[in-house]
Image (cartoon, rainbow, N blue to C red; front, side, top):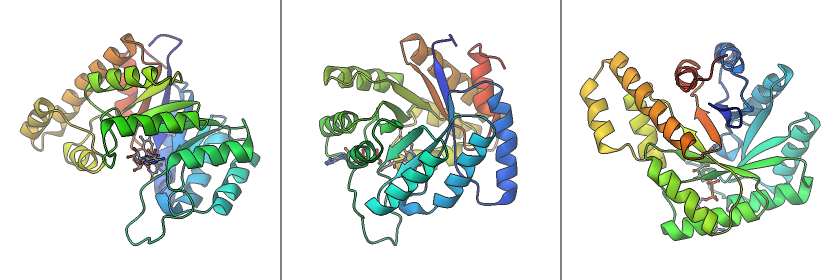
Length: 279
Ligand code: FAD
């Protein structure tokens, strides 16, 4: 990958001390590739608030840039204000600002309805302190009224003060190219970084994809289904397909790639190495 492309890795906050230890080992391997930052997800409704903070602080203490995700659904201005202050005090400079999805059983949507409101709030409270990333959906958000509405909502979120966007994962490069083109026509000039999901286990991928509306193209699904329990073949196929996807995206001008690592180093590292990037 050429020098002017950036890449980053996403983790989820582990629930146990053992998970935390494993993630430290994962991070060590990925840190050798010198990513721009590591991001850490946040359970909507604040369910992982402490663990997200703990993981982010650990990353920071190892000398890397850490970006906490922050979802606003089910939360209050007071909570978000306090969390922003904690991150600011800890020297965090980047936030991934999201609406999130209301966890089942949680009745109140809280004081923020959409991510654009959170972006405006962060800017109003903390000025230009944070680099704000938001989510983008090349295959459109599952709850969007229409493709056009989703694009306009994305534009609204960028205009509220976001600096750049990371996309939901996808395996159809044309969906990304089209999304970027349409966003540019609406006047969005900020980088839109493709989110990349390496393929490690098909059943897990199929579950995620059904939930978030990311399409697994039929030719891929059929091939992966055909491998059954043959994990080696699934992973070999996944590495080929996802490396080719990254090559295509980067060659056509994508500013970098963001890996959904699922706290595993192997696949993301192998893809980057195949792209010519070595530690
Ligand atoms: P929004 O931008 O608010 O959009 C949500 C829906 O509402 C869309 O359909 C949009 O078209 C519509 N909409 C937006 N604004 C308006 C408006 N003003 N009026 C009417 N309609 C509107 N979830 C987590 O819980 N934790 C995480 O850490 C997390 N990390 C993520 C990271 C990335 C890179 C991505 C792509 C997703 C992540 N998610 C995470 C999932 C995300 O929270 C869900 O997809 C959620 O359903 C939408 O969040 P959003 O910020 O995109 O919402």
